[in-house]
Amino acid sequence: MNERTITGKESPAVKESKRLPALDAVRGLAVMGMYIQHFALNQRNSFVSGNTMILFMLCSGISYTIMTQRMLEGNAERKYLNTRILVRSVFIDFAGYLLILLNGPFAVVLTAYAMLYLLMLPLVRLSTTKLFILSGTAFMICPPLMLVGMSLFEGAALLNDIAGGPGSALAWAPVFLAGMAIGRLDLHKMGTAIKFIAAGVVILIPVKLVETFILPGIYQSYMEWASQNPAIVNAQIDVFAMWPHNTQPVMWHMLFISMPQGGSACELLAGTGGSLILLGIFCLAGKSCGMFLKPFCNVGKLSLTLYVIQIVAGWGIQIAGIDRSGMDIGAIPCGDVMVALFVILLGCIFMRFNKSPFETMMRKFEKKFI
Image (cartoon, rainbow, N blue to C red):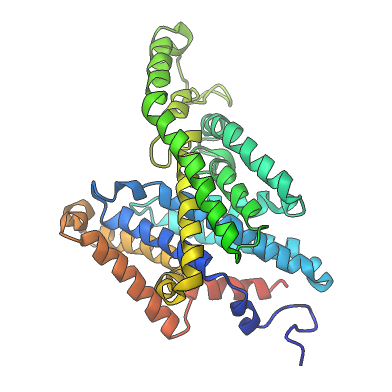
């Protein structure tokens, strides 16, 4: 019997065989970084703040292209593409709002993630070159636009998810777009992996030099100018006025600060450069020592499930009256390593019993409409 069903859908075994272990492993590394950031952050591992989300978004963009291109390969699947993306976005968005209702200690990005799925749908048929050009342009224009959105859309949930600041879809769009373009490349070739590492170094080093030696001076100059500008100093905000007269001033100074999840171009570029280096290294490692990647792959395949678990865990700790900051796991010798090993163990347990609760629920929800 043909490995494809009559509708053009692939069997789970075929889908599994087409997975790229390095991509799953890097996504798993991003999830482990999130756990460390939330439960065991210290001075030694502070670099994970913000960068793990950039790494996750880059991998998500790659997976998005692989998924959509695979669906477009078969004519029988073509008519399902829009519906599938829409249904998946609705499910992820609804799940995100449920997690936001918990009002836990961690920010929830699933709603912005869902918006990215929808916003990028018109771009899936663009050429690889156009995607790379669009991504490069987005690194320049999206940071100021999301700051304008943060001012204009405060309190408007859906619009805020689309373009309301550093945690919005617009803020992550440059990295996601870069991932979409990368997903068009042959990720199984060793030459591609080497190019990732080279590109990452070329991006990372100049950006870090700008962050260190140029950006602080620009920030200082802007703040001095702003402190002497009467329109900024004397601005009066009436929160009861009609929109847009009740909006906050645009926080332009954030463009000149490279801080975790601040949304500046330098932060995004530095994180993307580092992510490309990691992706290249893991692609090379997959060629010679694939078994080394397996624990990370287990986590990557359950990325959304494990993401939800950490949000619920943070809420549970808070609702139990436990001071999370007082736990200070990061201060324990190798506390961050223990958290990482716990995430790997959790992923292995789920995979041992072939369970992926969130992903399974999402697939079942999709089947109701497709």
